[in-house]
Image (tube, rainbow, N blue to C red; front, side, top):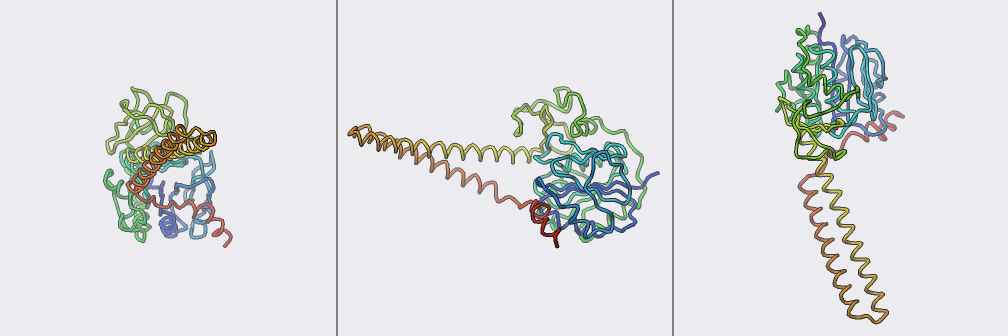
Length: 348
């Protein structure tokens, strides 16, 4: 018999402070292994930052490393942190919800390997990475804990998890350490048969050989293209929420796909604005040349075109302004805190 001895934690925007509070509450004799994924940039000092507040050893996870109780493992930049039996895998698999490392990938791999022994924890963050993975943990007999959205700096991830998953506990971060220890002390339930879709998606993140997604695999063909590679998307038959994967494995919740498509539209509009401005400048330059050659009628027509192109560019810029207002200001990720700004904290 095992207790709940595998704890997986996911955080994104606004999650650094919450993670520090939770880790500081864990005792030195914790009888569980803790794994943390936070959306980060190319450089991360998260392990160094957490080591200063932790009673437990904290290290950046290493590929092939054996899982040991009473330790905290932090995801590396640019690699999914995955669990396979009693070992850690770091894989440069397809991004999930535009992130690598992704929270869902860690949660799903933990559920596939440790089933009812897993406690999944979702903290502050934007969009909804972590919801599908937390649902997988529950389907495999594990425990789901979510930060109270009213207590989260950025509540979207917590709100999504509460909406789609039958969570066991939702508390402010100041009380989460106590709740987590209570579940760690409880014996895990019987291990159910792991659903094939969870195993398949865990294999995708681990880059196991074989076809990633097909018509007969995870779902049905969707009438949208992948925001990452423009390939065909399949709609996944997830019992909790609407999700998509492409043939090579890029994965999105509907909300993450919408955000990616919004970024795509934003890029296209900027290109269109630049093209109109360049056309206007070229027409104006040509008009000046024709006027020097005393071709006044042609110069006037080119001047008119230049004005028309400038109006087109201004129209596109107004569309950009309206588009950005509709999306709203993006919550600042904690990349600075675990990356460049982390250097300063490390020096202190």
